[in-house]
Length: 282
Ligand SMILES: [Zn+2]
Image: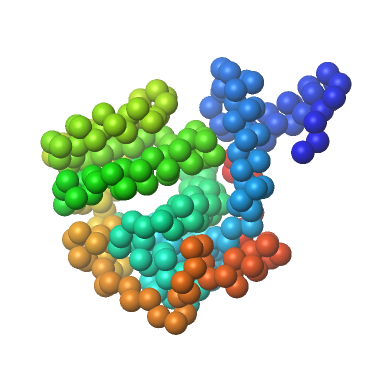
């Protein structure tokens, strides 16, 4: 990284940085924000994240999770298509150690493909997501320590290297026991993030509809959308058993990365495989 030396160069670098950050919320702590941004770039370089392949319509890579309602990508489910690593299919059913790669793969797809698409549809920059996490079917089993540690690893990565990308997180149908788990998790999150999280029991519909238009909310969450044109409806769910189980085959290699090694390798040289990465949206 080139370090600016003179004040003039510094001012120029900051102006350039600001122009890249158009559409992001204003920051009060410029120095802290710059530090975070630089550490994000550093992390991306060290881990080769810019080379991470993402699914686009033109490269035809399989998606890592089910998607509905975008312009540039057809509605589709995660299937055991050639190229998807066996680990992804396994993670989709159970959480294991490859979760880091799966998570990065999903984040990159979200930012490089989905958010750009959302921005085009909305006619304004959309660079933050609203997440609804349905706790239906959760029990104490999901709250064992290794699972909680995984949540910690993921939230650490997101807070450090995907800053300011969460709009709101709603946990709905949260079981009573979640109160105790929430106390642990809260300790790992910064106050800004805690403010964005709402924990709701079974009486959540009104709260969701305050923020989300009914046509964009699945019917089982109180909205009007059913997505009955595609297997799994709005949200394919292991709990509801409304999607076929993916059985990994020879085309799904046992590698920790989200895609097979040859696709990961191609991502290093082929722009079409990894899709553009830039701050904000075009
Ligand atoms: Zn839907």
